Every structure is written in C-alpha cells, then in structure tokens.
Length: 110
Figure (spheres, rainbow, N blue to C red):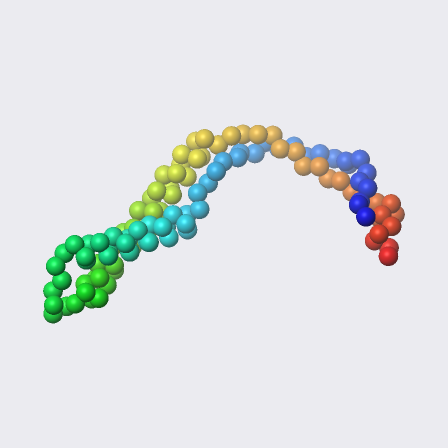
C-alpha cells in the first residue's frame, strides 16, 4: 500500500527568508467595520435634524468614515508588514527529489 522510495537522486539547497506577513484584506475589512461602528457612534452622539432624519445622517457620515477606517486599516497592515520584514529569518532549505519505482508497488497494477 505504501510507496517504497529509492535513494534521493539529488538535493537542491537554497537560502530562503521566513517571515510572518499580515493579510491586508483582513486589516482593511476590520478598519471598514470599525469605521461603520464609528459612524453609528458619531451619529448617535450628535442631535439629529428632524428634516433630514437618522438614516440620511448616518449614510452621510458612513460615506466618509468607512473609507477612512479602510485606509487606516491598510496603514496598520503596512506598518506591521515593514516590522515583519525586519524580523525575517534566513534559513537554508533543501528540496529532495525522490522517485518511486512502480515495479515495487503492486497496488498500482490492480
């Protein structure tokens, strides 16, 4: 059932950098969500004009605050990305190429 490998034919070694990188989309989405919450808070703290209404006032604030939160989330992700680039570690990685003989594996012939 298991493949029986031959000896490794060759090994490729190279130096690689390992680092933890942030996912920009997650930071931007969280920034937009925080902008939406900030819009609720800003509209709730200020008196509402009865001629305009709550929905229109909230929409107006959200139109400006959500993109601002999105940009701030992207800036935070960029800063974290720069810090993670400085903390990157260089390691030597090897890749073995192993070939399996089909004649030694009878399960493939069934």
